[in-house]
Image (cartoon, rainbow, N blue to C red; front, side):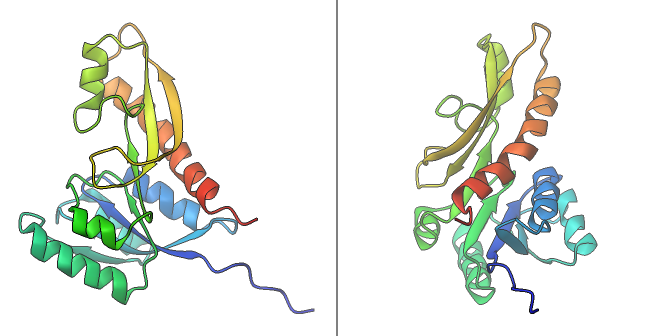
Length: 194
């Protein structure tokens, strides 16, 4: 009996700037049989990003661009994405804001994970702001990227309770654990095979 080959996986690029813990997690998720994605490309604006090590470990192509020259970098990035047939971009701690033009080229195909319960605390220093405002809860959100910062359609959220002694570092660790669960869940929800 011929074994039927499962559905084709979505060719995905992951954009990172730092340690790449969400990247590593997405790679592990992508290697599961039921995962709808296959990671083809890792893109970073930071040549020293620790997460780039995963390209070696898992033999995934990587590209590094200096996003200080945004227009040039975005043009080159788009070329790479097209030549690698990329159909989905996952932003995983990518600390640069993509231009409207770039986003329009990939409309509805860019996901981001943000460490707050959007629409609260868009942008940076989310944990700091949540603690400063004595929030009882924070969390993380996976959303589609549109041209407004952290404003795209929300796919999934996870609420996390703040303790009385919460610090930025303890909250970051707490939320990161949930990010690792939420991101794959959101991708599965979006691209679930019927």
